[in-house]
Image (tube, rainbow, N blue to C red; front, side):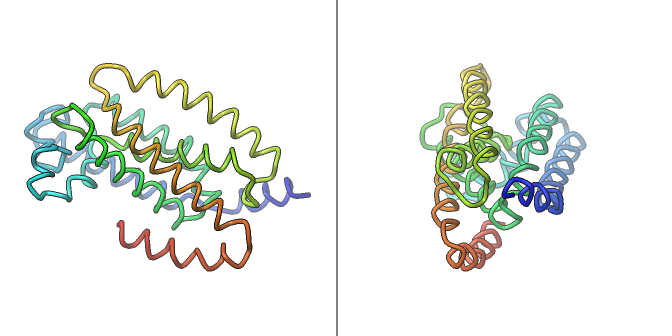
Length: 220
């Protein structure tokens, strides 16, 4: 059956990209602590935090570097946990290049939304990229795709809507960059939609693999 075939293929796949992203986050966090503390604003700015004024002055690299920085142990532990719990699943479903493209594009969209719509002076964290996975999850669970058997798709839709509701509530808490979350979610939804559209036909899905490989390398 489709479900059994899906399960066998799912169990065969690894989550190499998730491990590498997590490693980059942890190494950066340890460097933050070494250079003076992950909650020290000067350290975060020096290491590439998203600061609207600096981005608008031309320091565009901050749109990406800020995604891999975190403020405090709770922040990094929570995001790393969600990265494995949610990201690991999608890493297996989408494969490396589609997953990396979705994560990095969503992180970029979250950073841009933070710069142009947000009010926070300094923004760091992988939350925008993780919200991108929520967004992609919504697209993949709303629209039928050969990537997911129907029972899995319907179950994923229920879980996604619950997760989105909980995390939207968290986004309104103080010290949370709500616009980074929303921007990342929208970016992820658009990427998910593109993946769904290109997966409807086996030939377009195979050909799109080259596009996502190039896109992931460009974003990296």
